[in-house]
Each structure stands twice: as C-alpha cells, then as structure tokens.
Image (tube, rainbow, N blue to C red; front, side, top):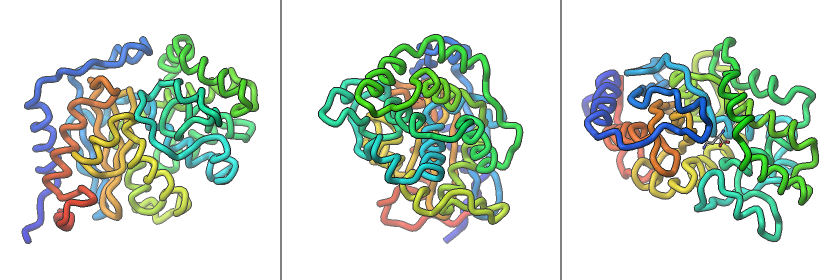
Length: 315
Ligand code: GLN
C-alpha cells in the first residue's frame, strides 16, 4: 500500500475543518480566555518516525485548562500512589457537564472521575509535596521537552477571581472529608495547573509520550510509569471529552482530553501524539474545528480503535 504523506494530511485536515462554519464560542466564563482569536486553528502530530508535522497556529500559546487533568493525575499517581488517589476520586464517566456538582451529593461524595473539575480538584487535594505546582511544572516540562513552559499569570488570576463554582465543589468535598487540606490552597494549585501556557506542539508531545507507554521517543527517557500511562489513557477514552466522550469515541475513537482553552490532546498507540488548537467551543466545551480535524485524521489514517484496518503507513 502506498504510504501517505503526513505533511499533506495535516494540511488537508486543517482545510477540511475550516470549510465548516465556525459556529462555536470562545469560553467567556473565565473572562481572560475570551480574548482568544476565535478563528485561530492549528494541528500538530508528533509521529513515531521522529518527525513533527504541523499546520496553522502551532506556536500560539493557550492555557492547558482541563488537559492539565491528565498530568495532575499522573503526578498524583507517581507521588502518592494509586490507592490513595482512588480513595478520593472514582473512574466512572458522568454524562454531566465538566463543571457539574450534582454528583457530589451521592452517598460516597467522591467525584466520579479525575477528568472533570470536581475530580481534578480532589486530585489536587491529594498532592502532598511542599510545592505541588512546581512539581507539576517540572513533570510537564520533562514531558514536553521544553524548560520555558510557564504559568499564564493573567488567566490564573482571572480563574481565581471567577471560579466560584469550583470553589463550591471544593468546599462540598472538604465538608465530606474528600479534601483534607486548606481548601483555598488546593484550589490555588488547581487554578494554576489549568493556567499553564502551552502550544499545540507541546500537547502533541504529551500525546506522544502517552502513546509510547510513557517514554519520550526523542530521548528514550521513561517519564511516566507504564501503568500510570495506561490509567490516564483509559480515562481519556471514557471521560476525556466530558459528556461528549461517547460521541467522540464513535466519531474519532482515540484517547483524547480537551480543555476550554481550545486544545484537544490525543494519542494513538505506538504511532502518534496529536494535538489541535481552536478556541471556538461547542456547548460541551470541546473545540468545534478541532473535532473536525480529528474526525478527518481518524478516517484518513484509520486511527479509530475499531476501524478494522491497520493504521496507514506514513512518511
Ligand atoms: N479551568 C477550567 C475550569 O475549572 C477547566 C475546565 C475545562 O477546561 N473544561 O472550569
């Protein structure tokens, strides 16, 4: 079979997405996020042949937002262990919006999974180091292979000032003993982790490390334990796109995590880390054009886990 030229595929995926009307909205509930260019769009693939393919706005910085939930979970698993982490957060999908607090009123009061706000705040509450946010930054920098990944101070302050619903959840969890530390400090760590500036290339690197069992393909360094990578990817499949996870699994069929900053990070086992950036979001908080790009790539390259055909060979 002829090999496909990935450089052309990413360009075609980008143009395919752009052929649709941009009918989404940039997130405004965190005021600072609303300043993003609603028509920005970028796609990046870090492939196992050691090449990085990109098209569009791949150097533009955007905040990780919920994509950080994957990294904070991995950090918590690394530093605190599986048992402790999963005594404070479950592993089941919710079917509710990412910022819903209704399920916190169940008998266990433990949030359903770490990929939604309540769950990630519970995970932030488990992190026990003296400087959990710098631990998070160090891990992220190692994963992305870039030392100058930084906090976006303006987004952080904007989230901190506007995050009343997250605050409500955190206090509910503290009331039930799910969070055992100073609630404002836990929230501060959570807001900071959401507010780290990255690019589509960084997020494709994160996807690549996950796709390769926790190993950086460029250096050969193991950064994430195999078991932790497996847990993260499985939760990305079931919960990574919030209450859009089921539909995404049908349409695209790869582990993915989105954020309201407009990023979606995906991985394709032993092949690709993929990231898209497009800040215009659908009602569920997922990038409208980003989803189109991923649908295109999935079809074009046979990425769906049940596509029935092998992933196309590429160069
Ligand atoms: N920081 C955002 C929040 O707490 C993250 C949500 C998201 O990306 N879905 O609401």
